[in-house]
Length: 136
Ligand SMILES: [Zn+2]
Image 1 (cartoon, rainbow, N blue to C red):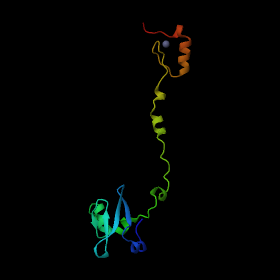
Image 2 (image 1 turned 45 degrees about the vertical axis):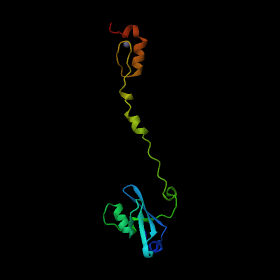
Image 3 (image 1 turned 90 degrees about the horizontal axis):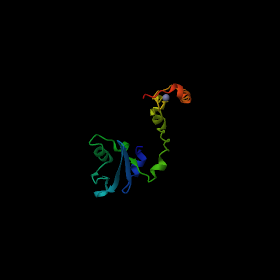
């Protein structure tokens, strides 16, 4: 959200310009300097004669077009200005896939024999006197 020519003319002391750079929100306060000239003061207290030099300072010295870099902070709550983000995708699917449920085979506690299906273990237990032979 750049500052257009009309907004640019209307900028006056007391306004705040904001910008988001590399994930961080920056703001610069427009203040009245000597001789009625405007100064642009960053949050860290540094003052610049133009939005471009203030923006350049934020960007670590890179050339900056301040009118494109900054936006006018109209005081509207940020949450209302932004469209609602879609809810984050639940991570449930991933964690469920990691569970090794399928690799767990039914196992007879008595003899340690494993079975492909639970029914086979049931059969094994039902006929334990014949099938189950625990190691002595
Ligand atoms: Zn058994």
